[in-house]
Length: 333
Image (cartoon, rainbow, N blue to C red; front, side, top):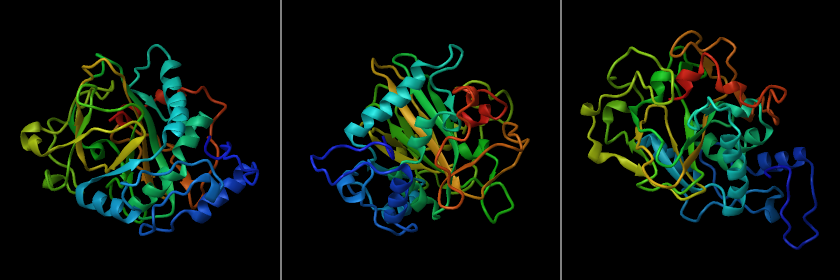
């Protein structure tokens, strides 16, 4: 999958190439900067195992403009159904193999330890949008998450801003002001009954445009995926203006750290599994000791441009080790 597998097109011209050669092909053909074209070519044209975006998907420039205007952007089909079979195998396999004490909503940062998860994070179809939205060719992973709401048991998550939990200082800045592009990929079809998200655009909640909004309270524990001690007071929002996130399997949206959002409980009979990666400009700094007690050595992993790495940094560790630690409470938001 991704950079190590080829799909036969009945043509011997498509020979197996090395991972490095595939990655160079991807970097060479990837649009440079936030104004490039977002056409994702097929393997026969480009030489890597990639997906073709749906015709209705926005261009990179359109996605970046929508993200800046609204705080989110729907980007259409990121993985075709053949690729999604592999994505589901990886993601759902981690849900099924998790330790008993780990909720299926809280599977965090496996890109640090699991080679397959890491490769999902650096898929070119995803990175081209992250690069365009962030306005840089140098992109790092802040965190990754598998958030799986099981049928009839998935919890409601209240209105909140991710920025309240993430002590991130963008490159060239001195104050905490998280600049993040979070992809939310539907591993399952997401409909009314299985726990969809709602997003408040910057027009719907103008007080949230690139700044924090009033929170319901500022105390209490952050332990547990449904314990939001910095949730947004719903009385300050016009929920009728919210955008529902109903996505087909393999489709995705990106939202910012400032975007106010929530999700329903899963009251239906179908699983609702999402694959989430939060990308930041390389050079972003984490301020230790605040907003969840992030350690000074918390790792941001470059995956595009400057300093980009090609393999999971800690495959020798237990796969689920990143799910437990002092920063995890804040990352669950």
